[in-house]
Image (tube, rainbow, N blue to C red; front, side):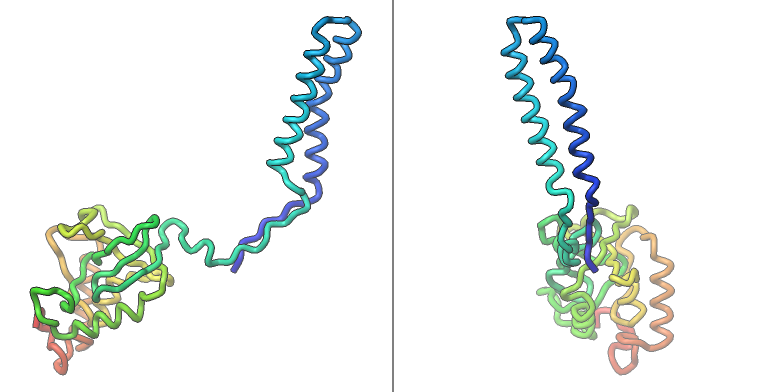
Length: 224
Protein backbone atom coordinates (compact mmCIF):
# COMPACT_ATOMS: atom_id res chain seq x y z
CA UNK A 1 0.00 0.00 0.00
CA UNK A 2 1.31 3.49 -0.73
CA UNK A 3 0.30 7.05 -0.05
CA UNK A 4 -0.15 9.38 -3.08
CA UNK A 5 -0.96 13.06 -3.33
CA UNK A 6 -1.84 14.72 -6.67
CA UNK A 7 -2.08 18.38 -7.68
CA UNK A 8 -4.04 19.64 -10.71
CA UNK A 9 -2.92 22.26 -13.26
CA UNK A 10 -5.30 24.80 -11.72
CA UNK A 11 -2.56 25.62 -9.21
CA UNK A 12 -0.77 27.83 -11.77
CA UNK A 13 -3.94 29.86 -12.35
CA UNK A 14 -4.37 30.37 -8.62
CA UNK A 15 -0.80 31.61 -8.25
CA UNK A 16 -1.23 34.16 -11.09
CA UNK A 17 -4.49 35.44 -9.62
CA UNK A 18 -2.93 35.90 -6.20
CA UNK A 19 0.02 37.85 -7.63
CA UNK A 20 -2.26 40.18 -9.63
CA UNK A 21 -4.59 40.84 -6.66
CA UNK A 22 -1.64 41.73 -4.42
CA UNK A 23 0.29 43.84 -6.93
CA UNK A 24 -2.56 45.86 -8.46
CA UNK A 25 -3.03 48.18 -5.42
CA UNK A 26 0.70 48.86 -5.43
CA UNK A 27 0.67 49.86 -9.09
CA UNK A 28 -2.26 52.23 -8.49
CA UNK A 29 -0.45 53.83 -5.56
CA UNK A 30 2.69 54.22 -7.65
CA UNK A 31 0.86 55.94 -10.49
CA UNK A 32 -0.88 58.29 -8.04
CA UNK A 33 2.46 59.21 -6.45
CA UNK A 34 4.05 59.98 -9.83
CA UNK A 35 1.14 62.17 -10.89
CA UNK A 36 1.25 64.06 -7.61
CA UNK A 37 5.02 64.50 -8.02
CA UNK A 38 5.63 63.60 -4.39
CA UNK A 39 9.19 63.50 -3.15
CA UNK A 40 8.57 60.07 -1.73
CA UNK A 41 8.04 58.50 -5.17
CA UNK A 42 11.46 56.86 -5.15
CA UNK A 43 10.79 55.28 -1.74
CA UNK A 44 7.38 54.03 -2.89
CA UNK A 45 8.90 52.47 -6.01
CA UNK A 46 11.60 50.75 -3.97
CA UNK A 47 9.11 49.43 -1.42
CA UNK A 48 6.72 48.28 -4.15
CA UNK A 49 9.42 46.33 -6.01
CA UNK A 50 10.66 44.73 -2.80
CA UNK A 51 7.14 43.69 -1.79
CA UNK A 52 6.34 42.21 -5.21
CA UNK A 53 9.56 40.17 -5.14
CA UNK A 54 8.79 38.93 -1.63
CA UNK A 55 5.21 37.95 -2.55
CA UNK A 56 6.32 36.06 -5.66
CA UNK A 57 9.06 34.30 -3.66
CA UNK A 58 6.69 33.19 -0.91
CA UNK A 59 4.15 31.85 -3.39
CA UNK A 60 6.90 30.01 -5.23
CA UNK A 61 8.14 28.35 -2.04
CA UNK A 62 4.72 27.28 -0.79
CA UNK A 63 3.49 26.19 -4.21
CA UNK A 64 6.26 24.52 -6.21
CA UNK A 65 5.48 23.29 -9.70
CA UNK A 66 1.73 22.79 -9.60
CA UNK A 67 1.91 19.87 -11.99
CA UNK A 68 4.41 17.98 -9.81
CA UNK A 69 3.12 14.82 -8.19
CA UNK A 70 4.38 13.56 -4.87
CA UNK A 71 6.08 10.22 -5.42
CA UNK A 72 4.63 7.09 -3.92
CA UNK A 73 5.59 6.74 -0.26
CA UNK A 74 6.37 3.14 0.72
CA UNK A 75 4.21 1.70 3.48
CA UNK A 76 7.33 1.15 5.61
CA UNK A 77 7.74 4.91 5.92
CA UNK A 78 4.59 5.21 8.02
CA UNK A 79 5.14 2.20 10.26
CA UNK A 80 5.61 4.43 13.32
CA UNK A 81 2.21 6.07 13.20
CA UNK A 82 0.76 6.85 16.64
CA UNK A 83 -0.06 3.67 18.60
CA UNK A 84 1.99 1.34 16.38
CA UNK A 85 5.38 0.32 17.74
CA UNK A 86 8.06 -2.04 16.38
CA UNK A 87 9.09 -4.92 18.63
CA UNK A 88 12.86 -4.89 19.10
CA UNK A 89 13.23 -7.97 21.33
CA UNK A 90 11.28 -10.58 23.29
CA UNK A 91 12.78 -11.20 26.73
CA UNK A 92 10.43 -14.00 27.78
CA UNK A 93 6.78 -14.95 27.51
CA UNK A 94 5.36 -11.88 29.25
CA UNK A 95 8.09 -9.26 28.75
CA UNK A 96 9.01 -7.60 25.46
CA UNK A 97 10.90 -4.54 24.26
CA UNK A 98 9.41 -2.06 21.80
CA UNK A 99 10.58 1.23 20.33
CA UNK A 100 8.48 4.14 21.57
CA UNK A 101 9.33 7.68 20.39
CA UNK A 102 12.91 6.71 19.49
CA UNK A 103 13.40 5.04 22.87
CA UNK A 104 13.36 1.31 23.60
CA UNK A 105 10.89 0.53 26.40
CA UNK A 106 10.45 -2.75 28.26
CA UNK A 107 6.79 -3.79 28.32
CA UNK A 108 5.38 -6.02 31.08
CA UNK A 109 2.12 -7.55 29.91
CA UNK A 110 -0.87 -6.83 32.15
CA UNK A 111 -2.93 -9.70 33.55
CA UNK A 112 -0.63 -12.59 32.64
CA UNK A 113 2.20 -14.55 34.16
CA UNK A 114 4.22 -16.94 32.04
CA UNK A 115 6.62 -19.47 33.61
CA UNK A 116 10.04 -17.94 34.31
CA UNK A 117 13.02 -18.41 32.01
CA UNK A 118 15.38 -15.50 32.76
CA UNK A 119 14.89 -14.67 36.46
CA UNK A 120 18.36 -15.23 38.03
CA UNK A 121 16.68 -16.05 41.35
CA UNK A 122 14.73 -18.97 39.89
CA UNK A 123 15.32 -22.02 37.77
CA UNK A 124 13.69 -22.24 34.38
CA UNK A 125 10.12 -23.21 35.17
CA UNK A 126 7.92 -25.80 33.52
CA UNK A 127 6.71 -24.63 30.10
CA UNK A 128 8.74 -21.42 30.37
CA UNK A 129 10.77 -22.08 27.23
CA UNK A 130 7.64 -22.95 25.27
CA UNK A 131 5.93 -19.73 26.39
CA UNK A 132 9.00 -17.66 25.54
CA UNK A 133 9.33 -19.30 22.12
CA UNK A 134 5.65 -18.68 21.41
CA UNK A 135 5.93 -14.98 22.19
CA UNK A 136 9.04 -14.73 20.04
CA UNK A 137 7.31 -16.43 17.11
CA UNK A 138 4.30 -14.12 17.40
CA UNK A 139 6.05 -10.79 18.04
CA UNK A 140 9.59 -10.79 16.67
CA UNK A 141 9.91 -8.37 13.77
CA UNK A 142 6.30 -7.21 14.15
CA UNK A 143 4.80 -3.80 14.90
CA UNK A 144 2.11 -3.85 17.56
CA UNK A 145 -0.33 -1.63 19.38
CA UNK A 146 0.06 -0.83 23.06
CA UNK A 147 -3.04 -0.39 25.21
CA UNK A 148 -2.80 1.10 28.67
CA UNK A 149 -5.20 0.40 31.55
CA UNK A 150 -6.20 3.30 33.80
CA UNK A 151 -6.91 0.85 36.62
CA UNK A 152 -3.22 -0.06 36.73
CA UNK A 153 -0.04 1.92 37.35
CA UNK A 154 1.87 3.33 34.38
CA UNK A 155 4.94 1.31 35.31
CA UNK A 156 5.81 -1.53 37.66
CA UNK A 157 8.43 -1.36 40.41
CA UNK A 158 11.13 -2.25 37.89
CA UNK A 159 10.26 0.69 35.64
CA UNK A 160 8.63 -1.41 32.94
CA UNK A 161 5.59 -0.03 31.11
CA UNK A 162 2.41 -1.95 31.93
CA UNK A 163 0.44 -2.58 28.76
CA UNK A 164 -1.76 -4.92 26.72
CA UNK A 165 -0.27 -5.82 23.36
CA UNK A 166 -2.62 -5.55 20.41
CA UNK A 167 -1.69 -7.68 17.40
CA UNK A 168 -2.06 -6.43 13.80
CA UNK A 169 -5.35 -8.33 13.49
CA UNK A 170 -6.74 -6.44 16.51
CA UNK A 171 -6.58 -9.34 18.97
CA UNK A 172 -5.31 -9.03 22.53
CA UNK A 173 -2.02 -10.91 22.78
CA UNK A 174 -2.15 -11.02 26.59
CA UNK A 175 -5.40 -12.95 26.45
CA UNK A 176 -4.07 -15.14 23.65
CA UNK A 177 -1.19 -16.31 25.86
CA UNK A 178 -3.72 -17.49 28.44
CA UNK A 179 -6.23 -19.03 26.04
CA UNK A 180 -3.49 -21.05 24.29
CA UNK A 181 -2.14 -22.39 27.59
CA UNK A 182 1.13 -20.43 27.70
CA UNK A 183 0.32 -18.24 30.72
CA UNK A 184 -1.63 -18.02 33.94
CA UNK A 185 -4.09 -15.22 34.61
CA UNK A 186 -2.39 -12.82 37.00
CA UNK A 187 -3.84 -10.01 39.12
CA UNK A 188 -1.07 -8.01 40.78
CA UNK A 189 -2.97 -5.86 43.29
CA UNK A 190 -6.11 -4.35 41.80
CA UNK A 191 -8.51 -5.84 39.24
CA UNK A 192 -7.76 -4.81 35.65
CA UNK A 193 -10.42 -4.13 33.05
CA UNK A 194 -10.13 -7.48 31.24
CA UNK A 195 -9.85 -9.59 34.39
CA UNK A 196 -13.14 -11.47 33.99
CA UNK A 197 -12.38 -12.18 30.34
CA UNK A 198 -8.86 -13.45 31.14
CA UNK A 199 -10.14 -15.68 33.96
CA UNK A 200 -12.68 -17.19 31.58
CA UNK A 201 -9.91 -17.83 29.03
CA UNK A 202 -7.84 -19.58 31.69
CA UNK A 203 -10.76 -21.79 32.72
CA UNK A 204 -11.33 -22.80 29.10
CA UNK A 205 -7.63 -23.60 28.59
CA UNK A 206 -7.54 -25.59 31.81
CA UNK A 207 -10.64 -27.60 30.91
CA UNK A 208 -9.14 -28.37 27.51
CA UNK A 209 -5.76 -29.35 28.98
CA UNK A 210 -3.88 -26.93 26.74
CA UNK A 211 -0.20 -26.13 27.08
CA UNK A 212 0.90 -25.89 30.70
CA UNK A 213 -2.44 -27.34 31.80
CA UNK A 214 -1.72 -30.67 30.15
CA UNK A 215 -1.00 -33.64 32.39
CA UNK A 216 1.96 -34.37 30.11
CA UNK A 217 3.59 -30.99 30.84
CA UNK A 218 2.98 -29.08 34.08
CA UNK A 219 -0.53 -30.21 34.97
CA UNK A 220 -1.41 -26.60 35.74
CA UNK A 221 1.18 -26.30 38.50
CA UNK A 222 2.23 -22.69 38.93
CA UNK A 223 5.96 -22.21 39.48
CA UNK A 224 6.81 -25.86 38.92
